[in-house]
Amino acid sequence: MPVHPTVLYYNTHGGCNQNMRGVMRSLGVKVDLFNPKQVAGYGMDAAHARYLIESGHVDYVCSRYDIIIIGDTIPHGRALLESLLEKDPMKQCRSKIVVEMTNRFDWDIVDKGAYYNTISELVQLSKTTLKEKLFWVANNNVEKAWLEHKVGVSMPMVRVLRPLGVAPEYPYPLDLPEPDTNLFAARQHYSTVYNVLERQYNIPLAVFPFGHKYGGPKNLLRFKAFIDIPYEYSTMKLYENIAFGIPMIIPTPRFLEELYDVSMRDFVRDNGR
Image (cartoon, rainbow, N blue to C red; front, side, top):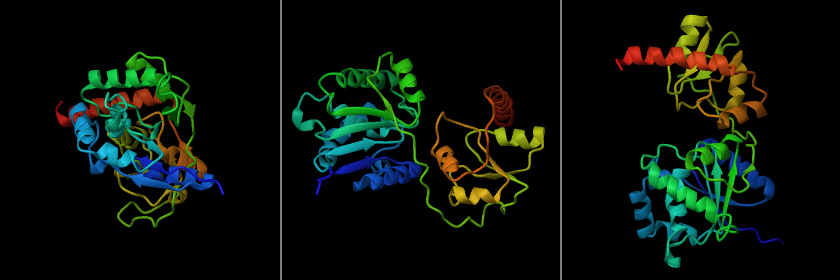
């Protein structure tokens, strides 16, 4: 019987967790989950990464797993990554680390100069001394180009691993708009663009608040279609909807630019900025 490695998924995102469980289940490998929000918020800075190294968090995690996969926002795993640059081997993460880029490698980072220097050094070392220890993957083709553009470094091969679209089914929440096949479903996110769609284009919408659960993609079949105004190049719900056969309406690049232009002007006016 083959002996499988011990694997930890170091990630905050529920959709990513479901996807990774599905991947590992198909491989017959058990995966444990750790939510780094227990030890840090978004955009971890260098000082907090140093604290997690010195306090023993990195050693505690890395001494228990053969492989650690950092998912969703990469700065959540900054302490693990920066430990690889420690001169003292006892402070270095002993696990193999897989960096799974799914949502911009520099999400919410404030000390970008220091962070980019760290990433640049790690990318270079992953071609040489860390070649068998640090690996880069992504769920879309933009991540590699974005990192190279921002950091100014050429990355080694970044394998693109598309999500499976795995999603559990839950009851539809009663506090959301009643499903109706005459309504287009949508999910609010950081803009007033859906207000523009209703007001200027007379599109009948049922808009779910950002962060509010809607019971999984299967419930979207109870609406006419799902309008997806992307806020990133890649989101987990896009792959979930594809896997479940949800009719989706996505704007062309030109229309998307027009919507965001109108929406941003409305946001500035309504918020006095």
